[in-house]
Length: 282
Ligand code: SAM
Image 1 (tube, rainbow, N blue to C red):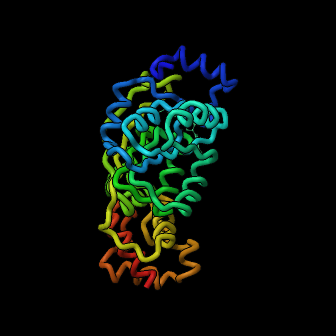
Image 2: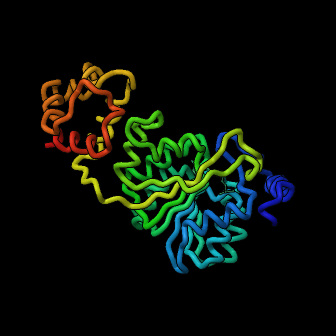
Image 3: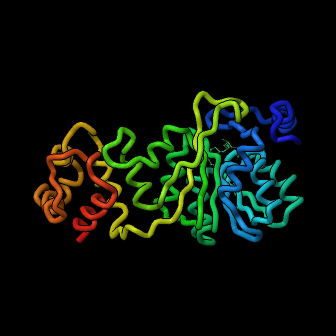
């Protein structure tokens, strides 16, 4: 089939008895140029172990396999899982597809076989941030990851302190990895065309931050961003963290790192958040 032809995609979906499922963000990439740019950015060598999230009908998967990669694909839609098994599975020995919600199956496969060398995904919009969070929080690491997400989410992934897009999610991303927005992709490059612009983000390892207690860091960041307009001190007041640690100990952790609690969370760098959480962890 021609992966760039909406007509071929529609015909195949009909043959498979698979209607397009909006809730699973099934917008297929129909631009060969964009596909090549994404795969060139991922830049895998023959024999490399690659995970692909949401392979759909396998347009990028096929090219990865042709480039000699060993691919494990994570797909929720049974119709696509069967199709990929019958086609790519029959042609390429080094292909495996895992059915289920990637937010769960990624962690299960990581427990069995460790992290991949590369990770790729044209992620479904509705669960893209949840999937990126699972990857980063469960410690799935790779030499390079390339994901396509809605542009607004990409902006949050790469945002720095003091900007409107800087959020708890930006701190999660910046504390675990180095993020770079590579390029935007217009709605016309997909079938069906979404209402939003997408962006391709490159995610590279980051060993800059030693995090003593990742769960504590996540809780602290979420509490401090819970009301963006409030100061750090006011966000902490009445929080679950204050109930557990006491306000005095929380304030002391900021004092120890020479940070004021009269400012807003958006003024703190990723490094500041990590230092406070590490001090609190003791
Ligand atoms: N990779 C294909 C492409 O670029 O044309 C399809 C990308 S489409 C944006 C997203 C894919 O993710 C769909 O195949 C969809 O069924 C799958 N998907 C949606 N939610 C998922 C989940 N929670 N876990 C795994 N796959 C999911």
